[in-house]
Length: 283
Image (cartoon, rainbow, N blue to C red; front, side, top):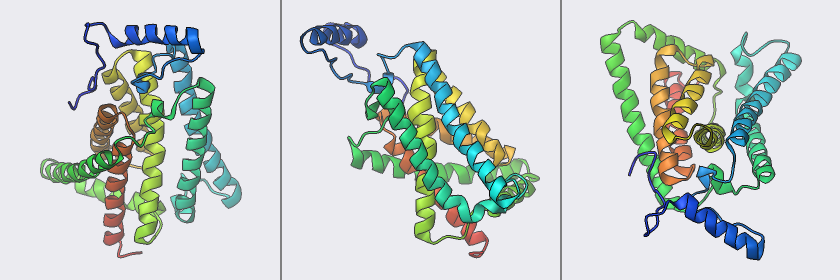
């Protein structure tokens, strides 16, 4: 079922899973001192809403620490801000994305250790890897088709958007480097790993715990995710980014894994990089 309440855990006697599972936890702790692993760790049942709110702040802090720190570093070493001259990012974009991936993974691991949570709590699991990968590939193909239709409809209804698309392309050209196919594949993977770990892995489950609903979590994380793209995209592209965010969120909830969203995101980004490379003649 492709809905946020997919894969419910119920019991034959009609009792709700959280209550029954908590009872089993209490019994097992009495004998072993350890709780039974949660069957659905992304629900974060053992975490309070206050702790979930604090974690949401930590997630945004992790993002701001890296972004602001890196921007300040460029300004200090290059003498210019990336907002004034985006071309300063060209030689640094791939290593920056790799460093960001390491920073986010380390921050996520530290948070999990402090909260005594398993990697599965953020969707970091290899269970069902082949199927999840296939779902991600299919999702990337489907979203590429949606993007093409979205662009064609936009051009028919709003012909002036072609100029905005040119502006958006020029903005991307300013900081996307000229890489090999393998380099672009790595860049796409790092970008997708970064954003999916942050928004779908860390932020969304904690928003669900805080707000009490997957739908509320999906919508809130999508607003944040889409809003942050205002810095590198034209406004008319934002509806498509919002659709992508919702689909990747639903895939994560459905499969209880980040793999489909990461693969889908990477495939979609890779195709955009290749298209950008083709339109610039490799320059």
